[in-house]
Length: 303
Length: 288
Image (cartoon, rainbow over all chains, first blue to last red; front, side, top):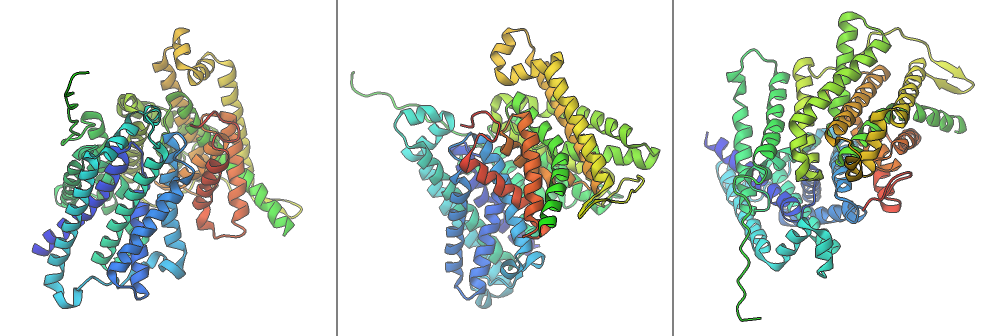
């Protein structure tokens, strides 16, 4: 039971990182990333391949982050100066193509069999009981760190500029801000966070395969961010843990709904996730912990 | 070499004509409602399964199956759009697009719940392939091509000559002016969604008759559908047809060099290349 709780909380932390990534792109800058699962996969595979060929784990994570940034820039290179709906189409395509590459380039990714034996940091010395606790603490610490950085960003002039871009690009450009550069930077930073989440996931599970990176993960994270609160990092984190608990709870459906085939149970589960996202969008699009907009500071001194 | 290239081009035009119908549906919804509807994948799958069910249980022939698929998909699309997505549209195109993904997951899984994950095929008479010199053409493919051409002709006539068609083009062009002329945008968006979803449903049946069908049939070709619409220019209906034929040929020709599983990747790279060099598409409106 303890190991189950540890496992769930660690996955929750990894989803929280993904939610923070999406919140930066979507909640703050108003761009969309429907290929989040793709960046997650890029990070997981990059680190798995790097450590598989002898790199230490920390270096693997750095390589994962670098690959995430590069993928983010390549994907947005042609699209960010266009209308927003093009980014939706391209990122969705990216998520699928990453899976196709992972399935087909056997020399690199071992195809559908996936990569196993990804080393967990300090796994040998901590043993079977110590490692999950250590890893949970590590992941949670990283979540806290990323959250603090993004919260700082949220409150800084940089974050305000991103929100201004979200509200009105033309006006922001008119105010003299290099809108495109802000968008590239925000997207690349978010891609880096998603890739880091992927690397953490791979070294936790010690095994990655294309099946781990279904586009459904992107929908989980959208649900987490919309339910938790768009534009507020704390909301994204809370939403992610809530979604993981919700997903784990749906595992017990088999007991509640006897007589269904396994494929039907899986369908009901996915249906609930989709329906939950629709309900949140329709009913409370700002989320439970909605964005706080600070009142303008009163002018001091007379004009 | 030359004949295999020619064969690839012919097959490409055949598959392209199948992609063309959902691509027209997607681009029609985009032109009138101004958001990319990802639920088009589910509309295709639903049309395909409605036809499979009728074919297996009542032994219906091709034409009634297509009509049935169009009606079922059109109604499902209309209902889903009005209940789930219409309230989201004021919040912006991206919110509606995300809602349409969620809707797609829900609809896809309703199909999976009812029919399971297995591949299903139509029970139709099988004809031998025809040969023209070195080129092989499937009779079923040829029939699908003919159906696609007839449906496209019908949709062009509808848009060009009918009252609804003209009103739809007016709303797509400038919805404020259209409203001034007494066109009710609510009715027109309803018609656009129903027509778009119905076209996707017919496309789903044709894809199913080409090979087989499962709950992910629509999702699997979604990238090709997008590529067709982007290549032709989002919102342009003739563009969607040209784009679909181009993407069909591009996919088949590049399959001479890369494994068949990369079909979706080819569509993706076509989108990226197009957006880099000519983002408004071959026949499209402006893109920024």
